[in-house]
Structures are given as C-alpha cells and as structure tokens.
Image (cartoon, rainbow, N blue to C red; front, side, top):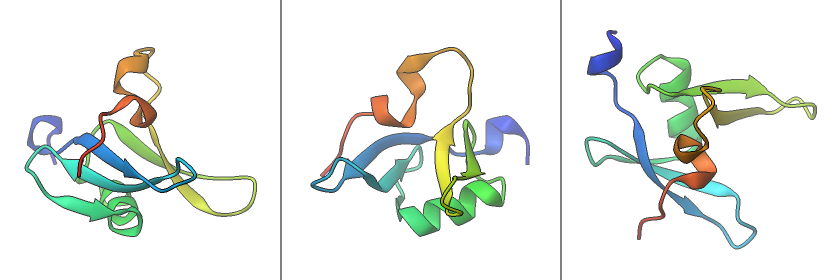
Length: 79
C-alpha cells in the first residue's frame, strides 16, 4: 500500500499506569492495542512498527526518524 494511502495514528488513550491502550487513526477509527498491532503488522498504518520486547511480547513504537514530536508517547490523548 502506498505510504500516502496508509493511515497514521493521531491520538492515543492511556491506562492509569500511563501505558498506551487505544489509538485514533487519521480517518477517525479507534483501535484497541491488539487491533492496532495487527494493522501495523499488516502494513495499514504508517509511521509505526512492531517489535519483539525482551519479555517476548510484541509492542508498537514510532519509526525512528529523529523527530520526537511524532513518537507515540508525544501524541495527544482523546476521550
């Protein structure tokens, strides 16, 4: 899928511990963490990649592009 046709994450929700739990896409869809992970792995979301953590779990992170303003933790929250 061309980069321009892919959605991006524009906002996030966090739990009480500050962990990311949900993501809002540029088209307005809201995805829980597992849905977001599947879509990133399928190549439907731009600017984010999935990686395997030391604990064996798979997690999301923003692409390393040198711009801290588009990191997942820097995105605004939504209700």
